[in-house]
Image 1 (spheres, one colour):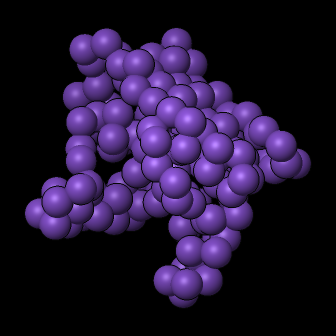
Image 2 (tube, one colour; image 1 turned 60 degrees about the vertical axis):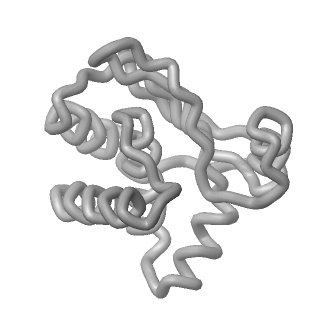
Length: 138
C-alpha cells in the first residue's frame, strides 16, 4: 500500500514528502485505519474547478476534492488540492502557506475516514480534528 504525491498542470513539489507521508499515516492509524492506496494530486484552480464541475456538479472553486475508494479500514482515495486556492486561503485566514496546505492534506484524509463538514456541528468536529493533527506535526 502507498501514499503518493503528484502534480497536474503545474510544477509543485511538496516540501518534506516523507515526513508529511509519515504524519498522515500516523493520523490514519490514530483513527484506527490503515493506509491503502492514497494519492494526492496538486493542481491549479482551473483543473480542480473542472473536476468539481464534471464529477460533483458543483460550479464553484474549492481547495480540495476527495474521491473515496476506501474498503473497510483500508483508507484509499484520490485527493485533489488546488495550490492556487490554498495560497489564497492562507492569505485570507492569515496562515502560512505550509500550515494551510497541511490543513487541507489532513482534511482530505478526515473525509476518507468518514468525517463530514456540511452541517455546523460536523464542521466544528472536523476543524477540531484538523487542529489536533496539525499540532502533532513536527
